[in-house]
Length: 297
Image 1 (cartoon, rainbow, N blue to C red):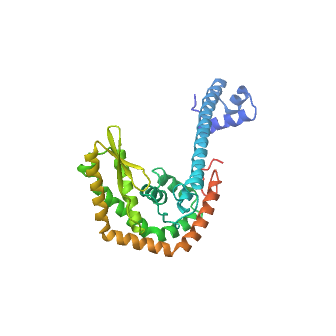
Image 2 (tube, rainbow, N blue to C red; image 1 turned 45 degrees about the vertical axis):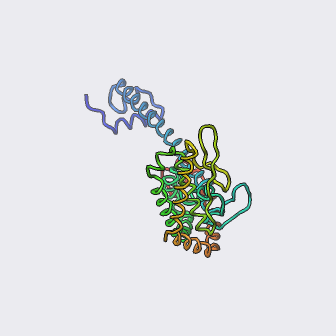
Image 3 (cartoon, rainbow, N blue to C red; image 1 turned 90 degrees about the horizontal axis):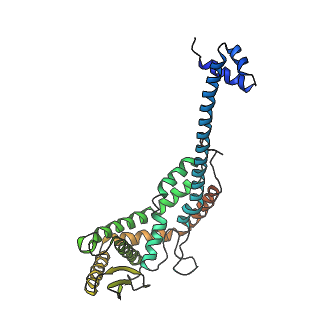
């Protein structure tokens, strides 16, 4: 029996769509009707599998584009907005710089502007891949050009503080969560110093069998120690780190970068307004058909 070609299988499928019976198709193609039935059954099963795959892919892509739109509209724009002081509802500081507050507040605000969540980086790249036509990326580059020195210098300071705290006499005295809070507290105090404010000290409070070290600025718990003596030693070490930080050239560089940004506040405001507007537009999309051939909608 001659081998059935792909062209003959395609002819069978076309004739079936036209409403021809199995016998009619067999006569036209020139093969046994059982052969026609077998090929049609096999090919229809394959088509069904492919259709299911397409629907699954469509659903996954719809979710992906929806996530990118939500990221643009709800998360990415936060970088270009004024910060709010603790417990109040008035705008403070200038765009790109935090308003002065407690150390932990200042660090959290810095992270909001300059340290996106782990998932933020790949989402931003994907958004740029799919919506590279948007002028928001030009505004993003303009913003970066102004804040880059402050961003880089403050990040260098944070790295310096990390090196100062990840030493045995601190690392093995507190748990990992407390070490993270200590590093945030120190970094926030450095930002206070660069803003012309004094750094916030620490007070102690006994709670059960432990002793808490609390930020004297707002009472936030920074770390716990096993006893009063350990608390005293730890507070002393953290104070020494901040005293050392005051003598670094890096602090002068950070102050200079902050002053530069303050002087360009008007430019930052204009860029931010445009960027937020474009991000809101992207946030209303659930697909990007102008630039992505994979768009399912």
